[in-house]
Image (tube, rainbow, N blue to C red):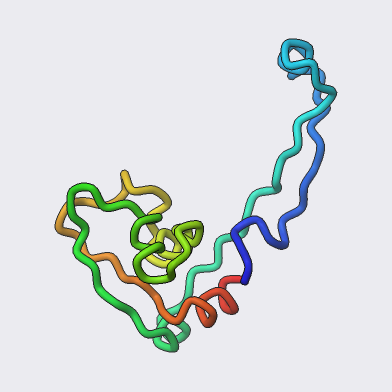
Length: 111
């Protein structure tokens, strides 16, 4: 199974503008991932997945939902991306969140 950093180019930032930071941390560069291209399923593609509805409540977190439905909390980003909600701050109490399943099928599409 993939994770959100798979297939992303890593580059070294050696920009002079960051020289003070490099000196303070005693490092020569910082590794960065290139910006991900977010692929959200079309209506037709999303229809290929089963979904479970969850009503967002106080204390909910994407990682908790991933642990509950996928048994792997690090796949929180799948739920966030599927719902077009990059963080929990983008979800309101009482709002429905859709959990796409099975995880393997969703990852093969998003990967």
